[in-house]
Image (cartoon, rainbow, N blue to C red; front, side, top):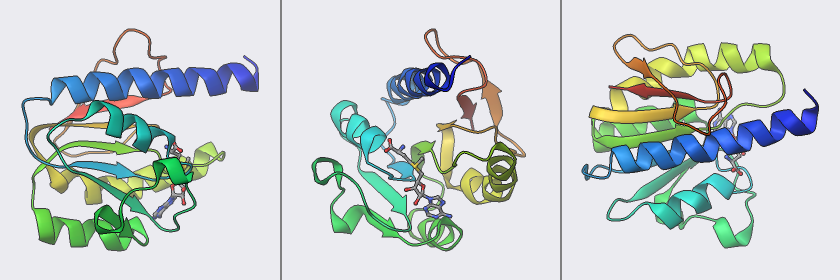
Length: 161
Ligand SMILES: C[S@@+](CC[C@H](N)C(=O)[O-])C[C@H]1O[C@@H](n2cnc3c(N)ncnc32)[C@H](O)[C@@H]1O
């Protein structure tokens, strides 16, 4: 598989899993959390398809395309290891959907990061809430569920609380 193939598989999987998770949680009212703004492509997609729920973005340095930059009052600026505990104090276990795309190119580092961040993410989700991640997560009580048609195995993971 070429790097282009891998990139396309990742993007296609991200969109298929996000679309699935937003649809599955459409009956829930709790906020949606986007972990890792980057260029803002997935945030922009969420803005297009999520209705009736606030979207909060967690990012340490906002450098997104101006067309997909979240408003300041819904940007949790800083390292997620600081901002996620603050979000738990503020929102409790209410998130209906969390999307995380925090990794880089080093797969081993991504896995180490996923192990560390998992216990910070799990308490934020409401019962029945979903998480979509670009890396395998390590949750205590959340179940991994099947990825939808169109997503490529190993490129995206979905978990339900
Ligand atoms: C791969 S990019 C996200 C791309 C985004 N999904 C898009 O569609 O444009 C990852 C982002 O996560 C952010 N990030 C990585 N580790 C972080 C941390 N510990 N705290 C906050 N943000 C972090 C990086 O700054 C980067 O902007």
